[in-house]
Image (cartoon, rainbow, N blue to C red; front, top):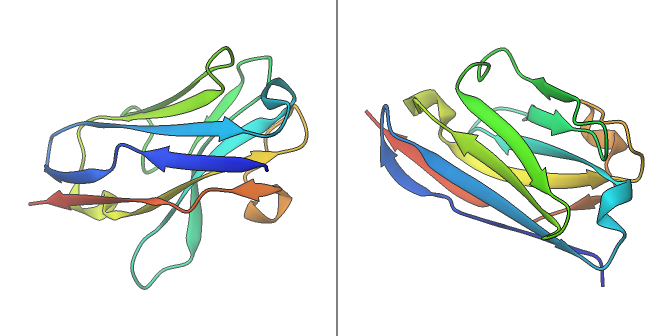
Length: 124
């Protein structure tokens, strides 16, 4: 069964940090690019960051550039999102998604598998 499981969410004060993890199983992880998306209450799902399968190319939303870092450990079939200097506006459910191509996409419609999400709440 192809599966993505997010973890690491929680409640943190503004200015704090969290590291989200996304553990993948059931598919050839190395061949997939990964995206982190978030659903802010009352807003559409938006892309946060993306990462190629092999080249290490990344993309970040303007709102998180310089604060968030995406990375992957193919040996552990896990993707991470290090979130620093968190702001209340980062409060959302965060989802990871896998795309069956080495190159990433910023469009949620291009992803094949999705996790169930993890809640991140940043208090002011």
